[in-house]
Image 1: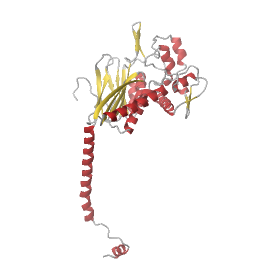
Image 2 (image 1 turned 180 degrees about the vertical axis):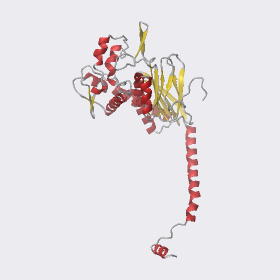
Image 3 (image 1 turned 90 degrees about the vertical axis):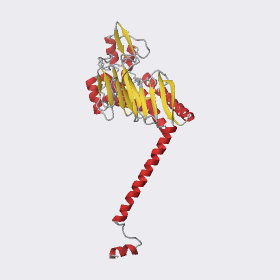
Image 4 (image 1 turned 180 degrees about the horizontal axis):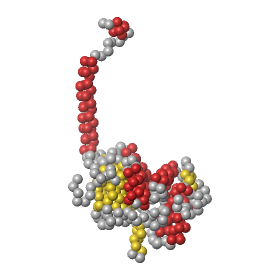
Length: 363
């Protein structure tokens, strides 16, 4: 025994493990890792095998909201569904344009007069709306409400406004004027109004997914009238197949996106709300800068980490058009898009080209 080892022994320490002893631990560690992996896989497989699909539909946010969910039993699924729809109704009451008691209605009534104290959720949505307005250089603008009113898209009394009317309403459309505090919002010009229709639905879907996840649900899809939020794959590990409606032919799809991760797929199309006057078709996705419907695309689908992001960006890209829109998508992390031109040409961002399924193609 060396003098060094003798000192360690006297101090109650044994000699350092030899290389040989260390080597004997490696197979044991590998064996334990393999056992743990097998146990986790078996538990996951057994859990997936006992989960069954359930589907529920509710009328919310002026649209049909469908929930597809995998749970171990009907009681668990029903409780998750009820909690989800209750939360979505609560948020709709805060963010609704038409409900006179909503935060949004109170903000709009006080335009040009005073700031309005509102809920944290409403502050969050409005701030995010302004962020996406900035990112898109005003192509998305939540202050577009006076123009939508002028065209009749709010109440359904459609008409083509005079150029003078559009110019007058356009003075009220500028997201940069909106003042947002920690708990209040102020619209400085009388007649200004916010419309969160291009982002609130996505936010509500995101909150719904978060609620499901917190309750232990691992496999679900929420479809709120084209705003689709996804929570993991289906219980058997297969992807959800999200169809993109053909903009010109009812009942047909122009593309399919298989999706397995948590995220969202949102489509904006000129076929959703429109009217025809003197043989000309006018739709509801307005260019805030001109006051007229955007015309360089007929459909935009955005895939993004959140439904709120996909919701706002689908409108923004529709207004920005193919070149500027695609450039914006390629600059944003985790965001992909499919754009359809009036000639039915599909423009697909780089991250989706190998994933998207087109009619007649074999993947």
